[in-house]
Length: 392
Image (cartoon, rainbow, N blue to C red; front, side):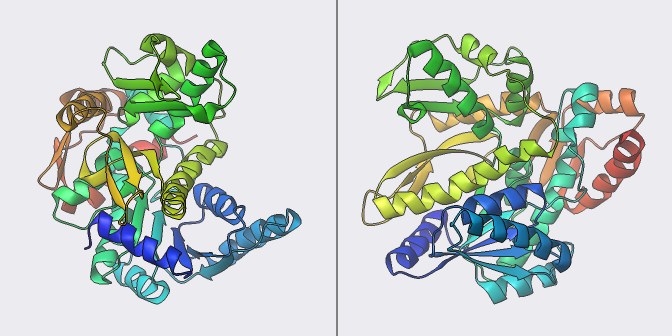
């Protein structure tokens, strides 16, 4: 498995050499459809987009409407290809597709149990999302196992609970995703809305936010406007000048009304889009761009990350604004609230508080530690004993 910097430079060589860049979207649910639409809207003839899944007929319908709408907007310049014979539960099937399409980017937007926002069950009962990590890891595990077997060099992005899933894969000695999408990217625009209003700023892009936190704080801040007593890392600048704004006021302002259905996945798809386009734009413009991403380099939680193409070679690195050890500790404090005590040696370790809540609310006893090899067994337990009896 090549390093992230090696993969970034492979992308640079192809972009500067005029070759097509292939983006493979694994799973064409709502996140995948939004992402496909956003990528097509770039009207970029250098992009080749491959949608991968098992139901070719449904994917064809979704592709048809996106292509038609893009043509109405006069934006259809990218090639779209359907790979409709891939079973995400079968590593050999995924491997065959990877060898065939040779992607430069992979986005895993698949879900083991589709059509349900797990948080609709867990937030009101547990105030924690980490209980679902065994469901989130399984299909991503298969994709990265196939990735390794195929000798794939694509930049890989995971969309489901990457705060714990990516370090879980890495700690088990597997290939792991380069980036996770979502979480912090859902909070930063809300923060910009508030800062712009308070400071009379017209261009939101002139506001620079640096935030360190895990999935839990994306949820609790966006729903309730506070950090539940956990001190996070938040830096706010305007045109390079640090702004002195009370963080608690910023967090409070983030609690804005949003839909709770699949339209929320516009944000997750936009986060995937942001990672891909930040890499491409940084290379094309020889610039430096900051993104926010969970699970990067196998770290627990969410981090600010720099794509730096200002030199002859592209480099990716964590933002130097805060020391790594401080960011890691803040994220451990944050994800503990989500029911995750640790991810180490290939095992996910639940907090005792979460185990007690699951037992009290649902009458289900979960293991304290979940080795990656047992994730499927625990996922089945979660589906049969919690999801199905509580699904509305």
